[in-house]
Amino acid sequence: MARLRLVIAAGGTGGHVYPGIAVAREFQARVADAEIVFVGRRGGWELDLVRREGFAVHAVRVEPLQGRPRGAQLWALGVLGRGVLQALRLLRRLQPQLVLGAGGYVMAPVVLAAALRRIPRVLLEQNLVPGLTVRWLARYAQLICTSFADTEAFLARAPVLCTGTPVRPEIRALATAALPPLTCRLHVLVCGGSQGAHRINQAVIEALPLLEAYRQQLAFVHQTGPAEVARVRAAYAQRGFEAQVAAFLHDMAACYRWAHLVVCRGGASTLAELTVCGRPAIVVPYPHAADDHQWRNAAALQQHGAAEVIPDGELSGARLAAALAAVLAQPARLLEQAANSRRLGRPEAAAAIVNACLRVIGQ
Image 1 (tube, rainbow, N blue to C red):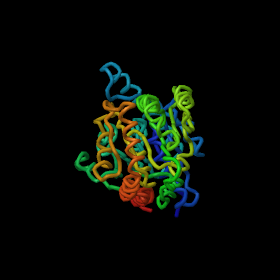
Image 2 (cartoon, rainbow, N blue to C red; image 1 turned 90 degrees about the horizontal axis):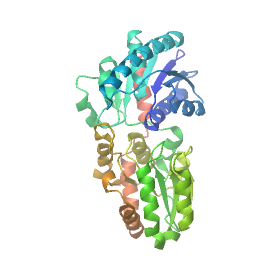
Image 3 (cartoon, helix red, strand yellow; image 1 turned 180 degrees about the vertical axis):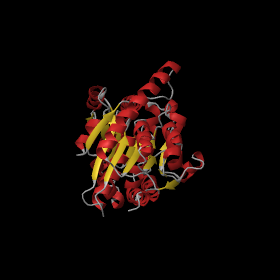
Image 4 (cartoon, one colour; image 1 turned 45 degrees about the vertical axis):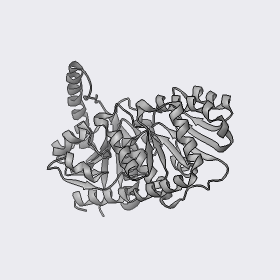
């Protein structure tokens, strides 16, 4: 196969960047000497993450449009024009055979520049309800790979293929890993996304005094985000719970392997990882997500008996403590949820996307 050069545009959240990394890893495994370059937002946190994963990364100027005042939207459109020019120069230098938009509004200037240069374009949409950027760019794409079959209804006349959400190889390797034995302690992984979640952190702090009777039956690994790591760590220590607290968890595969239960937001990539690993969850959807997509994502898991969904407005220490106590009282239910979760997993998603991309470019 001829040497393949690929540009992946992704940014904003780990839910966009990690699927892009998963596809990049699959390309590396499948295509000898593949050249893969990422593009992120200038000043975006994803730039350091991508470098940490060993990929070259460039940055373009871009600002969000959705949910902003009229004046800010006009400013963002002007910035978008400059971002397209930056992307045009970058693509002229790199000469890729394919541009993959993995998520986030940084896709817009890169995909538009690729359309102007007539470079094939493929988009990923991880959520059931596609975001504004994907809906807008759909007309410029040769293919949109979705995580949910129902997403096609929101992308009328666009070429759609349901592949599932790609997960990184180290997480895909857990597709056959059973839950750890339910012996001494229930292992609870708390992760509110790449930047943490204040509401979840606060609910855990409030739940700990109500869970003191179960102190010897619980162990936690908790990703707080950088702003609240000291406060959450102190709360666990004050109540005497076994807990590992970190601002960011880099080895999520190890965390999933350890966990019996995950408390998390409803981002599509997080839920995809849970189902590939077969881990039950208590999902608290972020209420301000565009088109309430986290609620829709989480509801799909709850419908299949793989998760319990607690609306953000109903989350409290008492509600979370009651949910954990119920799990401790019925461990067989946890095993049933794990099996239901695994049945929803799509460990082959990255391979399906690479196959589709190779078809698009005729290789």
